[in-house]
Image (tube, rainbow, N blue to C red; front, top):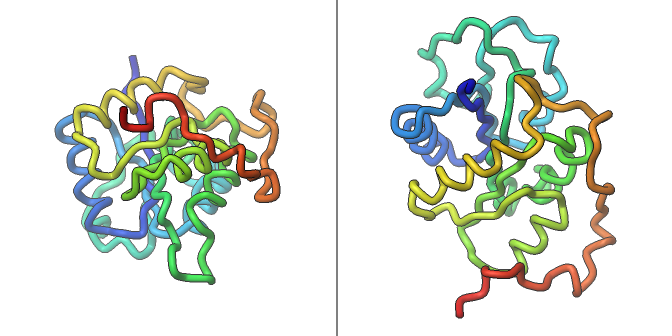
Length: 193
């Protein structure tokens, strides 16, 4: 099987760096794209196929300056997005993580999205799923469990080496207005028992 190619979207460059190191050195995945803002993430996904063979890094990512692109990896080669739920929090000029999740799943419905959050509130997990997230997990989750989630997600709708396009089958598009109180019911297994 081919190596799983991941895109990290988180506005904390230190967290992205730590996660990238673990994913690449310990778990054996490839982080082929990073973004610190929703707009950057959408640009990377929208430019797929238009970029030369290169890894794609956030312009604000200083840790990527010395990295050498891997041959044969383009923006189209993204198998899974790991997205920070708190992306853009406190900044009205930024697209929030939930909206970015919805935008990604609307445009690329077969592309799995894992949403990470610092809070375990069932309402957040339900909101993330309502916006199209394939999985919701805590940022502080033990890395072994995170790896298991990534492996599980890699088996759903995995486009053979390419980000799925909008023509792929999908869930129906969800809008912010669709988030009724009943949408926030805790998913099974999330509520401590």
